[in-house]
Length: 311
Image (cartoon, rainbow, N blue to C red; front, side, top):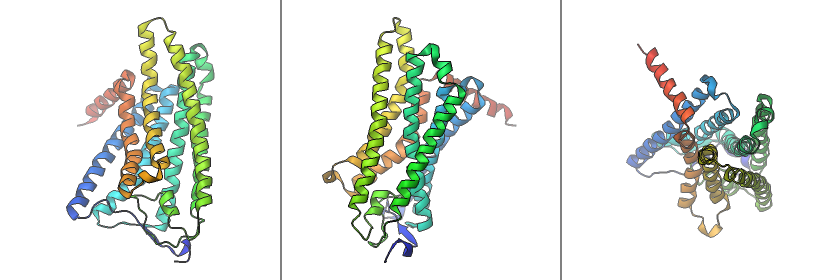
């Protein structure tokens, strides 16, 4: 293969060898995907339909659920289809948009989590000005900025990745098209390009992470000054779900892309990729709804409405 233009397809990493294992993998991924689909769809529908949830916090949560639903739908269905039909191929024209969507949705989600940290900061540290600062126009602009930043970031990464000539075969050691694995197929030394991408990515991730940390330092400082125990408990219950989601997202992605080279192995890379691509989208709805009575009540009313409409 002289360059990437001669590639018609990539071969993804098979997750199972025997037919029984393939069907087990299909069933496991299907269960996880359906759980993520149900959880995020319930949050999206509940927030959209219940006027009491038309607040900045739930508006950002709706956007987060859309991103989670999109990210897991980008990678998992193709892997399930390959296991079900006993194939491992993905077309070149299918790999490119998959890379783009993975980067776009995950980076937009990270930017959105940063915006949500600011929302929690204003709600707790500046409650009297919350309605003015976090009005509907400001919320839409912040969410749009997160989506747009993810889009631009994905365009740059995807364009850079597929502009590299590929001639080291077409086998991708991952269950979806992933940039580090595609770099391994390049004809030329892609070290400098990869370093450039890592530097830009680390800078953006680090900046957002520092912003979130500093925000929560101020939040916890303000919470500890609240005289009533009930007030402190309410403030913590507002912040802990978001903090748990951020921690889950950052830890899994950081370990996936910044782990020491001596820890890298095909099996470990596969396990880590499953963790960061499937666990956060599945657990995020559960984390946010576990102690959120307003959201639980909205979902309960949604189920009751569905039951009433059934013949």
